[in-house]
Image 1 (cartoon, helix red, strand yellow):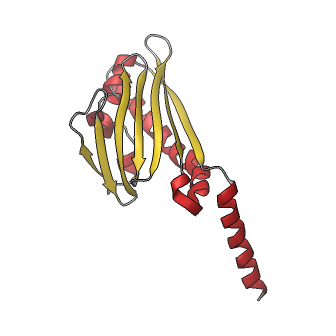
Image 2 (cartoon, rainbow, N blue to C red):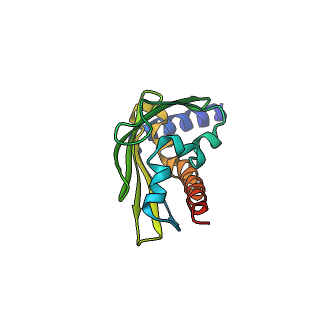
Image 3 (cartoon, helix red, strand yellow):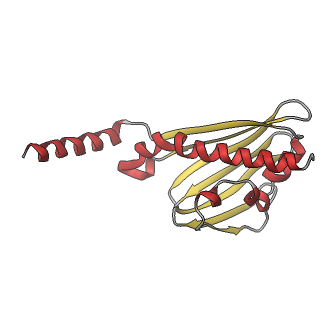
Length: 173
């Protein structure tokens, strides 16, 4: 009987937590790449070149990417489907000097905005990949997913940036 009371209390705390914890999240990682912004943008600004460095397909080998009508420039898009879910990505801003911005929709319910920005002096580019979103549509689990996004997605962002660095720096050797 005591065990059942403990389980009920834990479930109640979990549910109450889902109503009081924040559902929004921000993830951001940076790296310095030995290359010009134009070299970085060659890989970042063209969705057809993302498989060379993007961590998503490496993290879930079941992902199948379906390209949109264009792979670069504003409005370039892609959809994907895999064991871990489905989604849609569209570039909303793109600049060889500053980077890209894009909107994401996960499983037709959770939205996020992401930016891959460039800064730094000529010859070395600091690339910052960040994403903001809200898990408000994931009812009970949303706040708990939001709390884990920095750890989960941050690790993938770091891996993607390392792979991007490797691809860009290959151009200079």
